[in-house]
Length: 326
Image 1 (cartoon, rainbow, N blue to C red):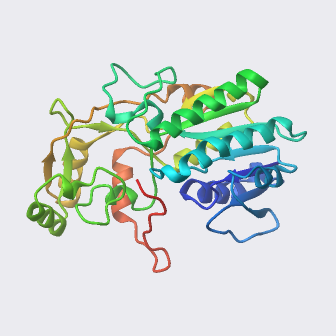
Image 2: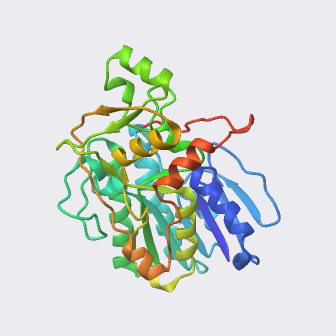
Image 3: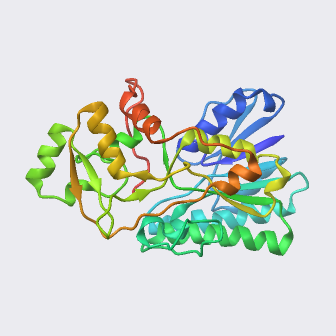
């Protein structure tokens, strides 16, 4: 088995490669990392190809002899790059894959932006049958186009391909910084812009966390997944014949309730919270299909996600750095 990983130096890619190479089930297999901006150190089982998926020749070079593809490369709210990377790049990967004599399975990692996550009021659980609903901006549109393109290639050419749709992916101390009122905020909303400047400063100094409320006033529920659980799902799908032409929601068993987050941090860390009104909507991704068909189970729940984030101690050579906007 030779696995091509795009987006190999990112959060998911780096964890996937490390876990794959350390797992005895794949002891005779190798990984090829397609890198663009950042580089990896090669070993006897890990080789690196430099290039971009938006260039057909780079894709063809990286796909030579590959049996399995895990496609992670993406970009966020960068209109100048998004079509080249997420549409053109995926097209060249799939075109090359379908013509390859060695290619066996293609796995795309999608995102809940394809169904609009908390921007829309879903009448029930978000399942694999929920219609595509991109919110404003180019990122959500790109997630819809990725899923549709993969689906159509499966219909047109009978490819052995699947999509694992993930919500917001956490690792290390990420979740702690999703709740920051400072410039170190990870992701969004940007809490300091939703309150007065003096209130934001007080919250930042005291470690106060936001209690985000949905349009109806109740604490908002939003879906997350820890990178370890996502990697576990990818490895459950890898080489699994059940996944052919399938879409799976891969997320925690329950969405994170901002009210429960505030209560847990008050009880365990003595941190105060502040109500933040919003026009967002609670939603609940249903992961039962992945659990039933892949035999996969997420290990992270709310207490573990919070405790791991607050207890994490970064090494001096591992500073927090956001590699993409949005």
